[in-house]
Image (tube, rainbow, N blue to C red; front, side, top):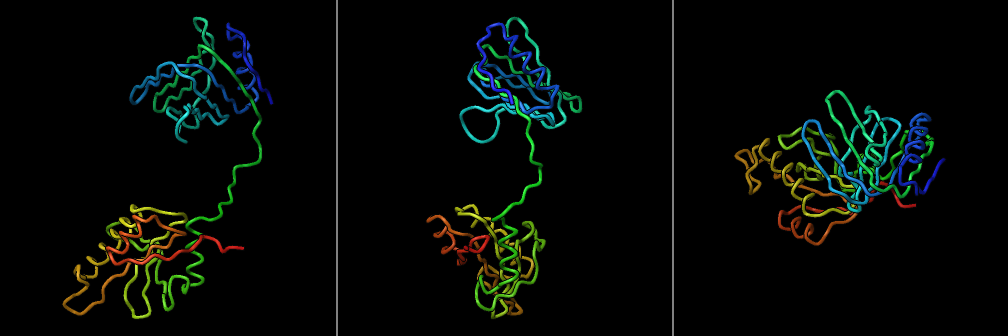
Length: 250
């Protein structure tokens, strides 16, 4: 691992560190004052500012500011990193040819440079996912409510696939929307679209009646918790909320 506070105004020291890191296949981070230019399918420019540049050995390049979790500029894996000193400034470029794109970061000041060999594998064991929540419900349907019977997962509809489709103890169709964390009104709107699509498919009116006396369609939102606004919208639409964590508490 190399961690360097760069004080060389010529940027030659940073250039040598970068070239060595690229040769070793290290993950590199640079923090300093820079401008950023992108040319390719579109074009963009960022004026001078203090930013973090991350260069990954798979070719990905990420430019981060002090806001948000997403980079403001990036290049995908498969790009190539190049470094040079031009007109007394460190220039780092990430390029790819299909499509033709170039991300150029020019540093007027480099405050810190790190180069590290990253190991540990790429396999991620995800816990507490919506799939865990679905598994809990399929194994124990009574967690939704007594008498609930799951019939289908990812059931197609005109609004998209429903997480779980089933029937309640009275045989009424039920759409179950799963969320692994606290949710707001948007989740209620998503559930409403699935319920509306199923009603249209079954020929159910807004009042829950059909010519052949088909039952209404219910909506149940399963999530650890909901905001007050979401609770209001659930009540307005006649939907239910079941508080359930993706994985059982120890």
